[in-house]
Length: 95
Image (tube, rainbow, N blue to C red):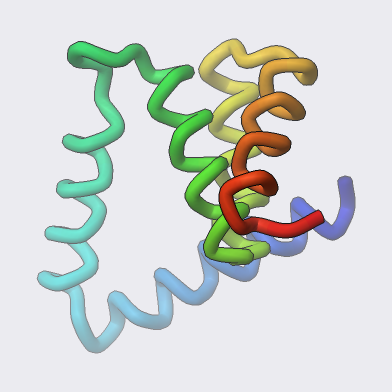
């Protein structure tokens, strides 16, 4: 759990650093991310489980940490997170 929290803190720090020289770009990216992940035809939990699966397939440890946290915040159970993770591994994320 500590490594996951460190990863989240690293991402937050990197975004702050990036926004120092690219405020508008970071703002638009964050707005786009917020728009895409808001509930619509799919609820937030489903979208976060998809995002987690994509992060696993991309092998992005920072993205994985953030989306596990977001999945839990959206009400996903440990079992749902593990099942989504297993599907992602099947599709190219590796064990």
